[in-house]
Amino acid sequence: MKKVLLGLLMAMSVSFAASQTTVMQQDMFANMGPDDKAVVVAVHYGSTDADVRKDAIEKFNARLRKEFPDCGFRQAWTSRSIVRQLDAQGEVILTPVQLLNELSVLGYTHVLIQSSEMTDGVELQHLRNEVQAAKRKFKQVRLGAPLLHNVKDYEMMILATAAAYGEEKMGNVLVCYASKGSLDTSYTMLDYILRDKGMDNWYVTTIGGYPDLENLKRELKQRKDKKINLIPCVFLAGEHIKADVVEKMKDELEDAKFKVKVTMHSLGESDEILDRYMEHAKFARQYRALTPSEIKLVESTY
Image (cartoon, rainbow, N blue to C red; front, side, top):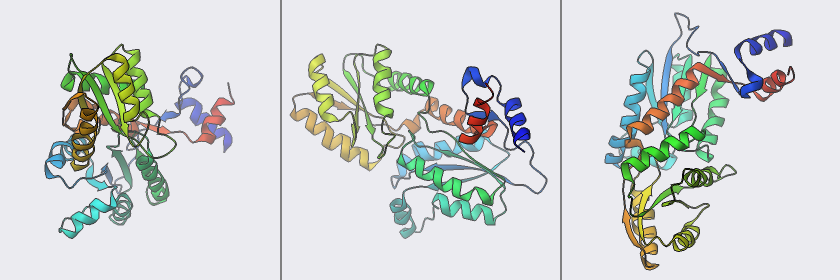
């Protein structure tokens, strides 16, 4: 059995030693039988704001339907509190666990999931655990990467945001929501890439993480930027953004004698951002992630 697995991995993981890949090419829909059923699932944090849902969530969902026209389509939301609020209003939206259970009962065999999470933080880690627990119910289940997964993702997001919302004569601040957990390094990487690209009038701050507002104030004073453009760096810019950015952060910076503009938007409104999410979904369809044991097995041959 070990020899068979090794042969398969060697054949499908081309140039492993050169690329240090952790995936192998394997289209999850390629060998579907006549009785198999495929579905693509969009997973969002969720929002009670109807305008935000229309501008970001529904646009994301429509793109997934377009990219996978031969699959069924469903969505799930990870925020239990928002799901409960909508349920009380008569609108039923399932959580990922509830949806996966339902899909199994309905006879779906192949499930491709794409989340609108920005980073590989606690929300996505929790979703990954739920997907792993449900795998035995299906023939194939795969989960696409978050928006910011590799360096090219960061570069794309920076360029798209700068082109759409940047101000040349102001300090542009990307306001991010920090993930709770050990993977709270995504936005320090974002800050580093901005510096590497020579975008000296661009900054990163987080709500609830690092770098925080005090770090931002010190950096702004050092560079003598007095006029600030706050740009929410989030998939959904709902009521929480208005409270945390428009009210709290803007007021605090103005109290510190900065002139502040807030550019309200959701990254989910951007076609370029949605393109990247779709690329992650298509990649997840075409490539299966290797397990740690499989990676070590292939490494041992070089």
